[in-house]
Length: 180
Ligand code: GAR
Picture 1 (tube, rainbow, N blue to C red):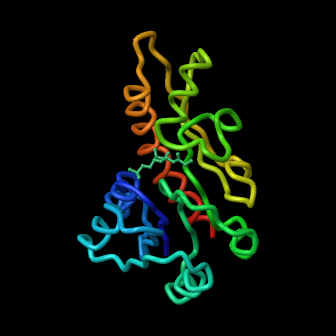
Picture 2 (picture 1 turned 30 degrees about the vertical axis):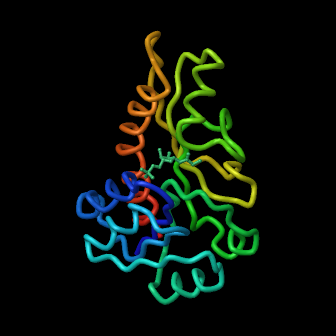
């Protein structure tokens, strides 16, 4: 049983919902911290949703849905330390860079790709990592790299990295859940 936390357009959530059968997991709960497209996508698929910023309430919902793994999919709220500790090694995040480079507070979405290009990197990619109280600082589980082209814009690079995310994240989830 999987919970997905999201704040935005929910393309990552959509990938996770589309890959359930292939990787043998079930998205049972979608938690959002504001009204967003991710919530609409979940509702369209008949998946339970919770719009909340109350971490006690979120914690209870996870327990009652018997959640084994929480996936942050473009979730833009900071998770309190007690929650990270309670769900230690049960929360994973997908970040659109090769951490530890280009991570930390304020590094999300297009800003990451802008920073990668400004730094003149030769490659970028995505990272799946466990979530700890330190933003983007938890143990790395898996990474996938993509090349950077001379003509890249942040938007073009974002598309390439998002394709890598779509391949990597469902596979990591399947692996983690088959080992629990
Ligand atoms: C994804 O590309 C994910 O890597 C990034 O937000 C996007 C979510 O898109 N996450 C971060 O930047 C976390 N620091 P979505 O809302 O369409 O799923």
